[in-house]
Length: 476
Image (cartoon, rainbow, N blue to C red; front, side, top):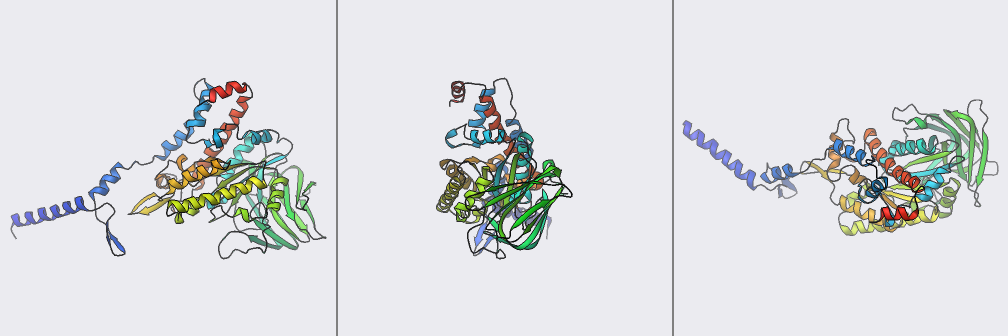
């Protein structure tokens, strides 16, 4: 073959490839159940136009938006409440929404005020909760990890616990190995442990490198239980220290026993004789804030209304719960095929929020929607279809039902941000493009904490101004 013919051959091949590159659709050509994908000009153009989320810039922006600059303090808060994308959205833009909670936190010098953080697997291992706990305890006092099941297979980065004796756990949500109870008395942690014949629960300070400082000791342990046998008794021990016990009891018989030690300890045991339903055990301080981490893997947050209302009311009252955080939505994305399905989920979430209003009328409710979630589409990791719609619908639902809302999706950068959180060094999210790593969860927990505490700082500032001056400054 002559050189000219070879040249023409190669020119023809490259011309054909060029035509295919220009003509090929960005999403490939469907052939039966398969999709044939080619190098595509449309896809190259689309990828070039796609804005990449710079995670460090996003987080730097979050940090900067919490920094108060200039001399006009009221102007900073006005801008924060109405324009800052990292703020907590409040029903009716009522900046006094959390005032009742803050009043109780300020009075938590001789008692423990409780925050319960319910969520899906995104908060397992005490992720996000532990940073909120640490910052609230730094501000308002308190030590320890809060409540957790007497028996359970979900580990925590913040405490080590074990149980031996006649304990059997029943949970209302889980996989096929989960054992259900024959009743609805699941309690504050959405589970119940049946104890027959006695047993011991042992709590130890954790050695986990991700544990925050204030969970490494505790000065009180608690037992929340009901339906005890006539022979029921319980006592707490820690080395040779003698504990002082207090009892709070609801009219129904649900009881909270709390043992207080003369100094913080790293290990304690609760020794129980007889039979009862155990709803929670706890490791806290003698005052300040307690934050419970309640992860429900695979849950969409639509189960709570099935828990006995009288029992949950007793649990919330006995434990002095004043803030309930619900962090759900991600597990519903695989079935959120259209707007009608999302609307149905809105109705379910509204029902759950109303349930908590009924069982804990003195508590405020904060809903946290799903993070960005990555899905492989045509070889690219992109945001799940309809996730932005899900986020906006959950915000609307929360605000309409007298609950606050924090937009985690937009805090982390919005559309297609999860892929960049995974690629970050160190990684801020795992290779499933759904769950945060310990480092990433810390960034989320820090931003959430700062948002809550910004409202508290404004609450304190308002004490020094007249109501009229505040209303004028906050007028839109």
